[in-house]
Picture 1 (tube, rainbow, N blue to C red):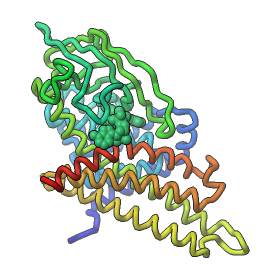
Picture 2 (picture 1 turned 60 degrees about the vertical axis):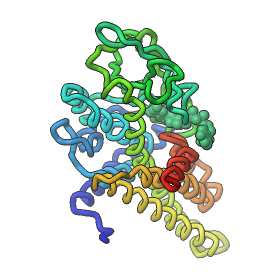
Picture 3 (picture 1 turned 180 degrees about the horizontal axis):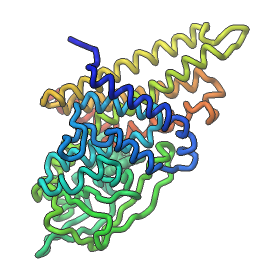
Picture 4 (picture 1 turned 180 degrees about the vertical axis):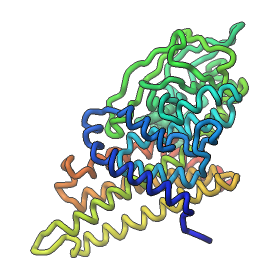
Length: 379
Ligand SMILES: Cc1cc2nc3c(=O)[nH]c(=O)nc-3n(C[C@H](O)[C@H](O)[C@H](O)COP(=O)(O)OP(=O)(O)OC[C@H]3O[C@@H](n4cnc5c(N)ncnc54)[C@H](O)[C@@H]3O)c2cc1C
C-alpha cells in the first residue's frame, strides 16, 4: 500500500494551497462579514482548472482523478469554505450528472463555460416539503408538444442566485415516488423562472443559498437530462460524488483550525509559560490530529475507489459522516485552545466552526449517511 501522493497530485496541492493562501485566506473574513461571493475569484478558479478538475478535457475540464479533486477541495476550503463550495458544486453536483447522463449537445453546450468559471451551474433537488425524503417532491412537470412545463419551488440552492443553468428535479405526479421523477436543465432566462429569497445563514455566508420558483416554466424537449423517470437515480448517484467533496471540505476546515490552534498555543503564555506546555492543551491537539488524519484517509479511500471504477457509495457515506462530524468537533476544540480569543472574529476559528456545521447537513444529513451505511452493512 502506498500513501504517497503522485507528482500530479502534489502539483495540484501546491497550486491550490498557494491560491488559497494568497487569494482566499486574506479576504475570507470580509466575504463572510459581507455575505458576498466574489465572481472574479470564481473565474480565477476556473482558469486554474479547479472548477472542472474531474471533467474530461474535451468538455473544458482537467481530466484528473477524484483524489486530486479531494486534495484541491481540502486546500481551497482552508482558504475560504464558501468559495471552495463552488468547486464541489461545479464538479460534483452539476458536472457529474451532466457528464454522465447528458447528451453530447448538452455537454458541449453547458460544461465548458462552467469549467472556465464564466458560467455557473446549480443543482436543485430540495424543496420546502422534501429534504431528506428526496423522492417526495412537489415540483411537477407536464409534457407538452414541444417540451415540458415546470411548476414548484426549490429551496436552499447553492449559487442559485447567480446560476446560468440549473439541474432541476420534478415529478410527473406528486406522490408517485422515485419513478415519477425526471431531471431538467433549466436556463435562467427560461420563461417562468424566478429567483426567490436569498437565505441568511449561520455559516458559509459568502455562498449564496437561494429559493428558486418555477411558475409554468417552459423547458424545451432537448433540456430533459437523461430519460424520463430516471431523475431519482441521477440525483442519488450525483450525491455519492458530492458527499466525498463535502468530506474534503470538512477536513480542510478542521486542518486550518488545527494549524491556527497549534500556532496560537506556542505563542500564548499563561502562568509564565506557553499554553502548549500544558498537558490539557497537548491532549486537545493530539485528539484533533487523529480525527483529521482519519477523516482524510476515509475521504481519500472513497475517492480512490471511485477512480478504480468500484462502487464507492458506502465509503462516500462513511467519509462524509465522519469528516463532517469531526470538522465540527475539531473547530470546536480549536476555539477551546484559543480561549476567549477563539470566540473573537479576528482569530478566524469561530468562522470555521460556523462553516463546518453545515457539512453535517447538506448533501444528506448525518442521520441519512448512517441509513446509507447501515443499508450496506445489512444487505
Ligand atoms: C447551506 C446549504 C446549502 C444547500 N445546498 C443545496 C443545493 O445546492 N441543492 C439542493 O438541492 N439542496 C441543498 N441544500 C439542502 C440540503 O441538502 C438539505 O437541507 C438536507 O438534505 C436536509 O433536508 P432538510 O433540511 O429538509 O431536513 P429534514 O429532512 O427535514 O431533516 C430534519 C431532521 O430529521 C432527520 N431525518 C429526516 N429523515 C430521517 C430519517 N429517515 N431517519 C432519521 N433521521 C431523519 C434529519 O437527519 C434531520 O436531523 C442545502 C442546504 C444548506 C443548509
